[in-house]
Amino acid sequence: MAAVSPAAAIAQELPEGFRTPTGNVQCLFFDISSVRCSIATVSNRLPNRPADCELEWGHDFGLHAGSREGERLCVGDTIADDYPVLPYGESARHGAIVCRSARKGVTCINGDGAGFELSRSLQRVF
Image (cartoon, rainbow, N blue to C red; front, side, top):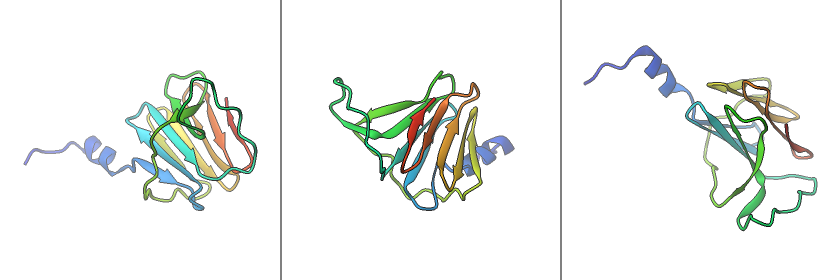
């Protein structure tokens, strides 16, 4: 059996995704360069679907390590899974992306300060 470096062992122990204590928001990290989060229930009106989006719209958000802004995604799949809970007040970091769970929702930010904020009443990209 090949030896595993300590850094590789630590990376394998990190969860690939998380969910909020309510389960309304689930996030999945892709390598160390991006995150995608999905919010199941919102109470506000979603923005109009873009003309070029023929798939699901409004509930999924993405952020890349080098992005200047988070984005609302047009998707044809789901990231839903039985991820571990990220308790309120805790953060999950993968590379330059940090996501923080709070009672008011989830905020994900990259190293340049771009990101998104998700809650039942507000979903915004910045």
